Every structure is written in C-alpha cells, then in structure tokens.
Length: 121
Image: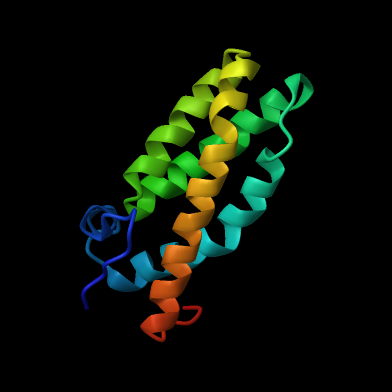
C-alpha cells in the first residue's frame, strides 16, 4: 500500500512503528480523532493558560513525530518551548497559523483514509 499524504512522511512514521502497517494506520486514526480536540484547547491562549498550552503542544509534537508529520512536529516543539519560557507574544505570533496548518493536515489524513476505505482499526 502506498501512503501519500501531504505533510506526512509515511516511511518515517512506519519506521517508528517497526514497519507494522496496522499500528501506523491506528496512529493515523488517533491523529485525526485527537488533534482537533487539542487544537481547540490551544485556540484561546493567554498568560494564564500557557502551562496547559505547553502540555497540548507537547502532545501534538509527539503524535506528529509518530506519524512522520515533521513540519507539524517542529512547529509544535517551538511553540511548546516558547510556552514553557513564558513567551506569550511568540506563541501568539505563530499559534493561528499552526492551528490552521495542523487542521489542514488532519483533513489531508482523513481524506486519504476515506479515499482508501480505511475505517477505524
């Protein structure tokens, strides 16, 4: 099966899953079910919510790495570090574009799963 999803390096993700396609496909499903909820929590960041924001960014960073979504992982890592350092201005400067990018990534994954008739595994 060829996995071609914009924003995802499936070979990298599969490697992290020891080449197990079933585990990788489960990871893709987990991504599309969990990331939108997390992105919603990240939407209205403030000085008071930076700590929780860093936890949410960390979660997206980790699962993005696991599926091979390098750009999402890299940006989430940067946002996590800024939030931990109390850099609200830095977070606010990138947050909206990150939420949009990650939302589009979720759409790309969902569309690929639908196109290939891969339902919850």
